[in-house]
Length: 243
Image (cartoon, rainbow, N blue to C red):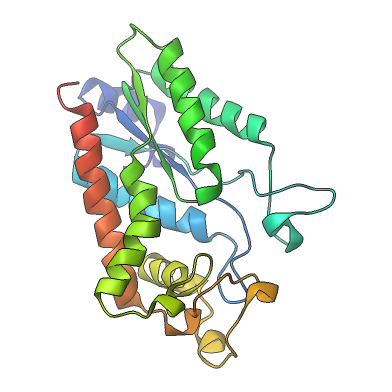
């Protein structure tokens, strides 16, 4: 159930009926090479958050936070060297996370869960969660960032792919086979498959860091998305048991 599809009275009644867990998906707007759309992280975390909410049964999904730290402006660093990437300073990002969480606590949510799809801001989320829990001491509300979500989509997925015979050299760390397969599994229209299949192997100059996205597939992506959802649901249930 997505918060932005509800009226305020529907949301109020859902909270009163026991849906007291809110999932805050955190994406990113960044380059992922010539064949993957800029909204990769936003699409991925939106779909996976909805699947996780269905698995939990008592959760509502907040709108995706799409503006995140991606490097500096002057000179442009990291992904900011590629058109379309949007960056915000770390302190602005952390304040946004905390403001959203405080809003949800005021409305009656007691479990505020951040699901971060991008590696660059994981520490920012952890710092925000620590500050929130310190300020909420004694209120009955808690913030969480389950390590299983990002851990499974990165190193955990790498391990799964190797177990299924994918060569390590194909996997990649950004916009390679792994990244592209995960997106094919949730939003295939965001991958320029025809162009990718006929392309030369892209590299760092194209915004692809390691791996070979030409060998990506929906089937490989589903290995990852299914694992991300199941492991994250289990982790959130353990964190919120008895709450």
